[in-house]
Image (cartoon, rainbow, N blue to C red; front, side, top):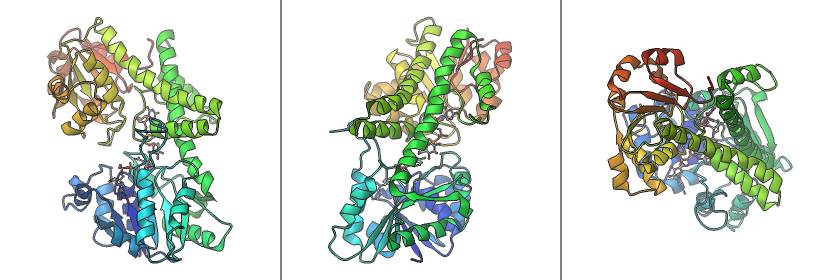
Length: 466
Ligand code: NAD
Ligand code: UGA
């Protein structure tokens, strides 16, 4: 099937950038991204590219190239579904917050709603592509819904998980390590569906990097990739604690092991804990799947990655309290960074939220500076935890547009995100404005210990036992 019209349901962190790149690279295909969230669609259509709902380096240029030419953002979901030969489902698949599997399983209600809407609206044959991250075998549920329409429309289901990381989304999409397409090669229609998606990516991705598998392998590979990546972070974080007790330095250890080509250097940066919308969610989902097959050892093995991550956040805030003479009550702690990593305004599951919550429970006063995250987002993150009233959160935590102001009169500074600009601040000026002794708790290991200690700071770096 020659694809001329694509519809993508879900204009979020994945749907927006992914479709923008497809539209930029395939000017012959009309791409319409739809969402029920009107303000999100309005932001994607905003003339001022600084107002796009997702901040990603380079995204503004891609959107500018394609928007209005062959890239459109709309709230008219039915129309876009009906006009498309290929429909990507890119809606959110959060952890369930209710019922069976609460706190572990993926909530598939948005996926099912999409499938039902596609089934209801479609008048011509469609290829439906799972772009969202889904539990293995979800495609069979989607197929069952789509095949029960009774209107003779035929559907092919493909799995095409997304591997982009936030902050580097555009580069990851333009030059992916691989594109994974799962489909059913045992039927003619299945083969054709796979070929049409391969053809789209072939417009800019070398053919040998486009991998085709069966649907179940594709679905499971996505969960596996995230589990392995998160496991590396938890592994190095576990070592960071051992380094602190033994006088080793985790960066040196990471370098030493990373030079072994079998281990490799990436994803070995010790931190205050991984965040982001997916690592925890996808591992818990994997754990749930394993448990549901009675595979308790496999489930417990992977769950430990999340347990270690929670421990890392907890011990970071515990260390702040014990270092500040076992009490932070009424003391001002400055936070540099709130986003879950640099170069994004996304805060989902950011370690900063848990560290702040722990310190607020100890009655600390927190002043935050993050170059990209707005105050409303930070308050929403804290309110969501329900640890205290929202008025109290606003009383105890202040948000600043200027890092020097955030650090003024503070007893300690906690670095929660590895934004590059932090390294270039006038640290002498910051030191002069703080209470003494002035502490820095570097949860990202980005600062120069000697430089800061020469100024007079008491410097704690995650994973450094010196
Ligand atoms: P998101 O929350 O940013 O966006 C999802 C969008 O879907 C929202 O705007 C929501 O309004 C919309 N939506 C939900 N139900 C809808 C419906 N019935 N009709 C129309 N719109 C609907 O989520 P995201 O971060 O883009 O993640 C989407 C999926 O991609 C998830 O499964 C996630 O695990 C996966 N993923 C995310 C990333 C990432 O970096 N964020 C990377 C790879 C994979
Ligand atoms: C991650 C994966 O890298 C993507 O491949 C995947 O598509 C995506 O999840 C997803 O499925 O959502 P993302 O969460 O955007 O991408 O960002 P990462 O760069 O993976 O970082 C995740 C967290 O781990 C961040 O908090 C980061 O600071 C932390 N991290 C990462 C470390 O603490 N140390 C490291 O060495 C690497």
